[in-house]
Length: 140
Ligand code: UDP
Ligand code: MG
Image (cartoon, helix red, strand yellow):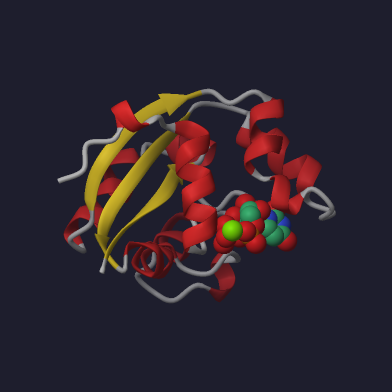
């Protein structure tokens, strides 16, 4: 079933010139980019995005990192898009990630792990609406 998910090339991915590489890996797996833009998040915006993690010990460091430079925000559409993106990304900690995943190939640490992908339909809905309005999404 076609679904939508939100992905982010995080500030480390942009700094490392991996924007094209990340999008290429998604497109190669038949995911379609239906919305795309850059933003430099404020700390408040990063905290709002990651509010589910607000009680976690890494929340302050994570939201400082996520507001440390521009990011690329995108909505991807395709069959099983949420799980597919998570598989292409690899495990949160790059040392646990499968070979050939984005995080295994490029991430430096559990925090600076290049890419974000929604983890459920509920969170995908929240995350897409957090960054994009209906007129910015080009379903096809
Ligand atoms: N993170 C961290 N330390 C941890 C766990 C997570 O810095 O121990 C960061 C990391 O950047 C991760 C983000 O917080 O991508 C969100 O965590 P989550 O568990 O949702 O991982 P993800 O869904 O991104 O794999
Ligand atoms: Mg997550």
